[in-house]
Length: 315
Image 1 (spheres, rainbow, N blue to C red):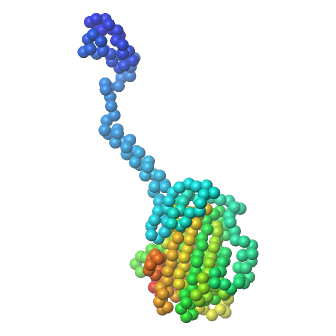
Image 2 (cartoon, rainbow, N blue to C red):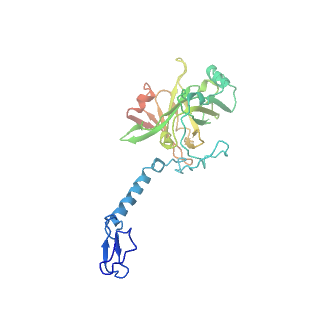
Image 3 (cartoon, helix red, strand yellow):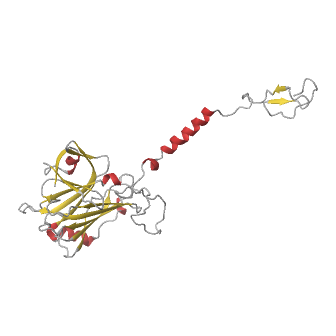
């Protein structure tokens, strides 16, 4: 390309336009270059669009949307990866790695001698008893540990079988309603006729193959559901008063969640009777839990219980 005044060739052949070095005020179009506007830049609206896109993409990250929490105090789980040889972490600082779905064959099961002891109902009398309980193998590699201490109030022990579940529940217009959007944990059973659940005794339940995940476990364990069932038709119905029930759920990757249920020390409050279902709420580690009897629920299955509203009374 040449200047029409001095016929000098421009040295900027690849640019959209060229200037003569002798006559710089003269600008000549280069037909071989793209036809973008001169000195084109991104407008503020385009920059705002890309910034908004980055913010939306970050918000859609499921880890950011569902932060797991450690305990009833609302402390978040620590997120970090570790191998199998890493140091075991405590419930105050744990790794919240999503659980892997394991095959049923890899699920940890109770020892054979423990199962036989449960079937026979004959275990050695001691202050701390270890029982196996839980759901049938379903592909979950989580576990739960429940420590139960029976009150020392007169007649607090029982010979009846007690079943436990965990789920989320709300109070609504003098009724309770369960939230079935989150996994139901349970049943976990313990029988009082083989010297368990005696007055002042501490009993222990361990179960593997338990549902739940780190993102929703605080909802699944919001309340505890209890029901006392007679083992024999001729058994005399009795009542039971716990002092505390401590629960600890743990995933296959050592992410754990703990929730305590403390009962009122008043011997006139917090008794569980045969028949209807009961729900127990957790108020933390400094105040007693609320114990509520769900009226006219003794003939319902656990799934029928969760699917309906129920009147309640505090005990």
